[in-house]
Amino acid sequence: MTAALAPYRSAAVAAVVLRIFLGGTMLYAAVDKALLDPRFLQASGVGSIGETLNFFVTSGGPLAGIVEAVALPQPVLIGASMAFAQLLVGASLLTGSWVRLGALLGVGISLTLALTASWGVSPYYYGNDLPYLVGLLALAALGDGGVLRLGAPAQRAYSPERRAAIVSGTGVAAGIAALLLLDRSRAISAITEGGTPSPSPTSGASPTPTPSSSAPAGGTAIDGASDLADGQALNFSAGGTDAVLINDEGTYRAFERACTHQGTSVDWQAGSGDFLCSNHGARFSAEGGVTMGPANSPLRAIEVSVAADGTVTYRR
Ligand code: FES
Image (spheres, rainbow, N blue to C red):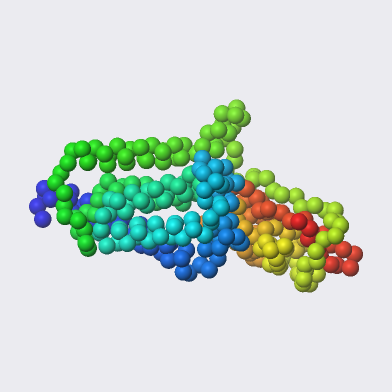
């Protein structure tokens, strides 16, 4: 390898590294959605595509209206289509077949998720879709690297027009990513509140829900709750919604288990006395407030009360 060819070899190595990681991740995401996670391809329930789409709507991103009108009425079809698209991207990148097209399809998937799932995440670097978007953009520009190609089309002759189209398309997508990187929520907060940005979720200053202390009439008893030891939690179904009850030094609090980032179930950590979402690491205090992002809103509280005989009830 002469010195003149060294840059091409570096580009090939960079392309292969990106192809293996991004292609492998896309393939895993597709298999996880279609086969490994029995909750995903369901119209409703914790971890389902239905609940995820509902979250996209309530998060208020720029695609919320489209998601509500087009995707929400047919969640399982949308979930299956997403898994199939990720399968195509994974297969393209890993086999070296039509890598630029595969990467651009991946850009479309990541951009859609960045404008929905990651839209409300602040600071922006907790949003896990942006790194994939930028990595896939880089791969779309790099191509397959000229190595490890199975079934690749014959190399096309150099075309200035084609190159210009790729560069300008990449520039537009990079511009959109840059807008996201401006950390929209903080910028708006700084403008509307006289230059004082809202605190980061990691500061622990997020609002916390305040469960009612009054006894709700006509509540539903939670089985086993009266035996709940101090510092322990009990998962239960609140009218079909996965919920969790904790005993915090004699104070009972209940929350929906769905993480307010993307809906994964949170788990009570008796050792640290808080809730952990294992998906992206968000944490919530015993009062339900966010103590660590990427979630930026508190767990949804469920009203509970304790009767004179120790029976714990909830009311929706
Ligand atoms: S789903 Fe992302 S942190 Fe919970």
